[in-house]
Length: 294
Image (cartoon, rainbow, N blue to C red; front, top):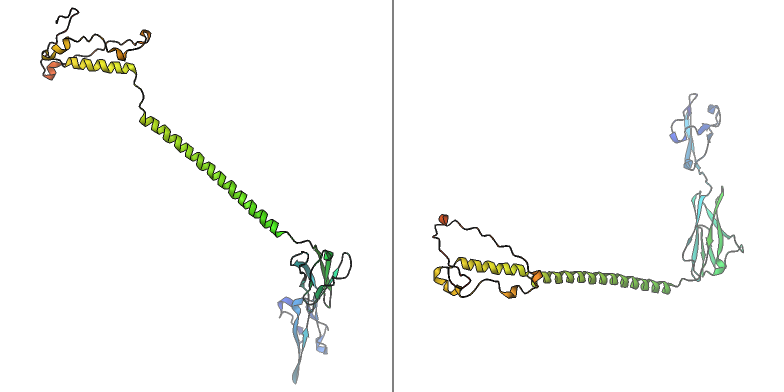
């Protein structure tokens, strides 16, 4: 804005330093405006207003900033198999309308396939009933009033994939994997049962079969029992014992070689204190070698 010999240019922060009056002295009647370093955001409607006594006049103008195409990308949509329909796509990320797209074949013949259908507004090239001859490099050119940009893509048409073979192989592989897994589980269970059976058998042997007694312990227990029975004798029941000699232990417990007979040391039995127990001592008769009682 220019008024009273002064210019004000701080009303639009994003345009500060990029706008200026064309004339150094706008009061001469030239209010033209220069916009430096034009950007796409500068697109819009601008108004020029002139105030001079006794009235005011204004005029509007539309500014459209054109941007050339940029960051154009090519891609393939659909299956690249013989007999399938495949679409080549071309899209420009930047660029002012109206954008126009054009496809051409770079490798081999420059002409597009006879079955191709091109849409210049969307940038899509449809190839119907693709064949091996369609393989090659394709280039797309995006253009508008101020510039162009291009990209390329490689098309490789191949025979159809044998899906039946893939499915069959997958099924066989799955079955083999299940068989291996079941075998491992079976072996593990079998090994576990065998260990459990061995523990049970070992346990049964320990509980059901008692260990054999040694002959020495049997003989000692026999002698000890006879001595206790002799100690409890009284004169009234000695007649039955005087007729049977107790000079040796029964032979059934000592049937071994003379060298293997263990030597038993005579056991020393401490005489009980009969006075403390309140008992009356009893004389036990003994038998001599000639059979008389002493």
